[in-house]
Amino acid sequence: MKYKFVCGIFCLFILTNCGFKLVQDDYNFSIVNVNATGDKNISYLLKNRLNFGSKEKANQLEIEIFSEKLKTIKEKNIANQITKYEIKIVSRIEYKTLPNGDLNDFTVSKFGDFSVTSEHLNTLNNEKKLVEVLINDVVEEILLNLSIKLNDS
Image (cartoon, rainbow, N blue to C red; front, side, top):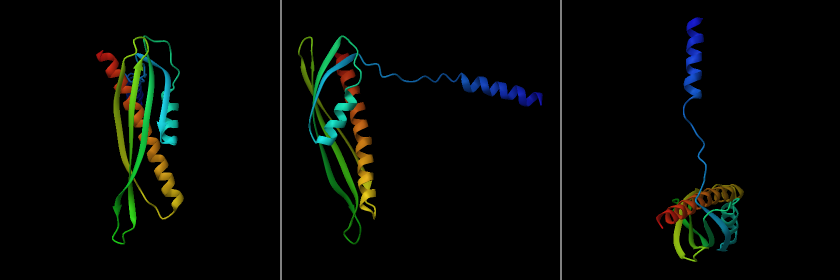
């Protein structure tokens, strides 16, 4: 009985003091304006995810994004029916730092594939889920690239 109690207390201390911290996305820039063109759905989602509550920081940015979605056939079966599609999202980002007006750009591309099901609705849902995941990856890459490029200068 005493052994279980001591072991339980020991495990409690070990598990509660593991050193885990939440990662906070604290960037050294604030996004003032986002203009997104290209594929309407992707542009809308990118613009909403990049327009986070911006605090006043030293580096203020205006961002222009041109994005497109390329959907190609990845696999066919022996009956020549499509079994997988590949989606590639390509975004070209131009950003301008507001105090001095420097204009720079970079390109981000992400791709993934989804399976075709016997029901068309499930296929559309698979495509929608993949696009959401790819857009999240594109946003993370954009923020990371901006952070790296602004720290270099």
